[in-house]
Image (cartoon, rainbow, N blue to C red; front, side, top):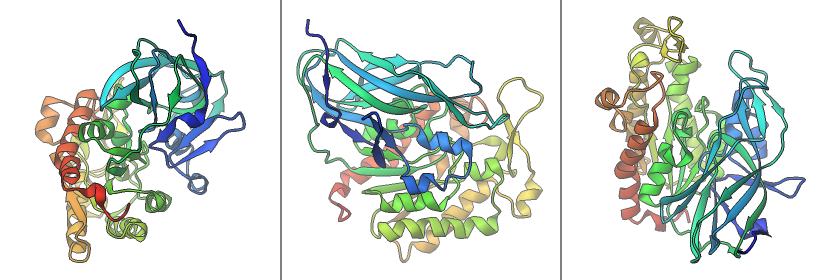
Length: 392
């Protein structure tokens, strides 16, 4: 039996990252925001959520039966002593999961909303090991855990590893909230954007940040500069969660976000998706708060319907405004489309697959949303030949 031998990190291709940094130890650190944008991140929670590896994977060819990665992984934790759950790494081939491995992150980012400290407790690297992969040459994508920041330090295999064949798939760039980031999904390939990407066979780059789909200008500029054949923006729930904006500011902020993306992508199709169903803030204003009568996570509305009349945001008012904004731009922007979030997950879906904390989809609903998005948006775009769009 051949022992795994170290291979060069340049023999793998990082996909789904905005930039990939070389670290002082010679490792690779994929990032979903460039350095200039990270310097503008406004709070400590967003520091970590933007560092996490949602949608990031390694692509390569090999006939190895054993594959090992040494990673320095950092996962968010409420304190320095709470036991971290294992983080899941997944291998896909031909859009299907063929192997899984788990490892507990060696480092932790100490943060909770009750104690928003935001500091790193450095720990050791850990090894992620896949076995029984077979002996024929195959092309894999190795998906990193959406819960962790992951620096790839070393890679080993019991057969040569080479870069993958050229990726000709449609390049899909997506921005959204924790629902798109994957909170409460059971694995990275179970987050709805990855479910959709694998179902449709497209090349995903996710700039979805838990708690931080806030129409931030630095996110819009990041998307403006990133290559894409199709762009989607799923906006609304975080603005209600934090009660951070009124309707007077919301409308021009959406226009400005789209204008900035259009500066770099004048003709690229853009899909603006409104929020999925979330009963407590459908008609009432945010913020979303925890129900004090319950000992478990359960979100309720902190505002009222009367607050919406006064200009605060509910999900219904956001859907109405987004539909109107897209319609108003359509005469000069024929490549802009509105997608009602209720077509992805509506009231009837919530009755069959209730939100476990009254806010975030569970694993079943995550997969359902991904399949719906693929069938409504990605597969039709792919079949229409958008891969040959002039943005390439």
